[in-house]
Length: 101
Length: 206
Image (tube, rainbow over all chains, first blue to last red):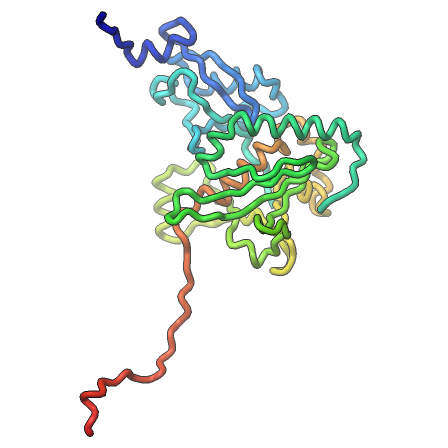
């Protein structure tokens, strides 16, 4: 029996069942939440959703930054598809540190 | 600094355990960053940080977080010798925690150019009055910051619901400002002094 291989984009979207949507795991200050995101939407839409899902409403979204596993800050103005994010990928939403010293 | 528990211990303990459980959920990722949780026994957590981009890999620091009275009071942070647990004075730390100033919106190209011209300015996040003093991490969300007389106007209670003061937040700040930027060891070679010439014995007249 011949095996059929799934394309990358199909694999990315199977978690949500929609071709334009992807489920991402966002770790908000250590607390993981799953957020459904539109591949064609800018990444900052995920920040708003993740803060709402996790109940972190004490600071405005612009005070947070989304990082990958290696700690690199992702450009929130870019589209999710453009950033090459895939279903189930773990991202870290961290509060920017306040004024120091 | 350790203080007496005056918050109901069951409350602090439950919040401490929640913080540790969240850490465990992402522990695999943290390990890849070079974070190693050595101990988690209420009220303290001990985390070792390694610089994985350096060859050979270096153990940069160990941070002890004290969650006594959490979260009516934020965690205290002390850098310790990972072998003995003794608090390290400023002069023995061997690393710095830095924040680049005036570059919030600068492009990577700008930062690189300024670094090449040695025109970058940094703010030191670890503070001590004397080299023999135990340094403290001067950031909102850290007990020592809010206890400092200079910050009486910036109460922890204004930050408590913000996410600052969580285990992840504090470890992230230590790593991002102190460990992740490390790219190579820095050595100071002491200047050599001239002590004379080595001679070829065969060339010496007999």
